[in-house]
Image (cartoon, rainbow, N blue to C red; front, side):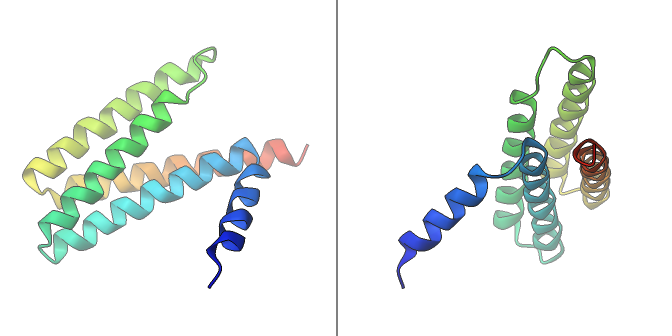
Length: 124
């Protein structure tokens, strides 16, 4: 199978996405990794669990690093992202399913808010 064609298609897809679509893609990946952590924790696969949590933290750091600091909401999002990282460190150290579910729910709600905002701005 020729992977170059697939790679070219994938790169072209990413290059044609709007900033809002890219943001949603990053949030989708975050939610996917948090779900993976939940599943691994329930199966007592702690190596996969920890890797998924670590990847989630890297995604949250990326989200924070890419904020446009000229907007007031950026400081509020930074605090929220700091909270996510703090809670995920607690999740990892204590293998805390309840906190993991809370962070995942909050990330999903934030993703939905960004989706709604993107939809409202693109329809103008």
